[in-house]
Image (cartoon, rainbow, N blue to C red; front, side, top):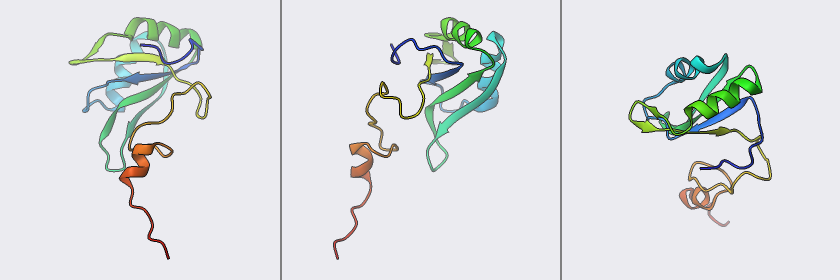
Length: 117
């Protein structure tokens, strides 16, 4: 699975993480391949995990090493997909589709339309 071009950044996106995985668990898991600077598990407004996270490394080399090592491996019973994260608003990002993401048609359908006055 490809997350766009192989644009190397020091920040990784990890998809298909277990629902119960938290920042501490991911920091410990990915810390074996370099110095983890930050971890962010993306959650809904209700606090449920959306099953993906962003992990920052000190250097691009550490991130590349971690991606090569962890992509396609298992975290508990979930097979994770690891790729380099693209900046917000990057033209190469796929069109939003989630009901939690503003700008997607699923988001628009899940919100009530304002009444005409």
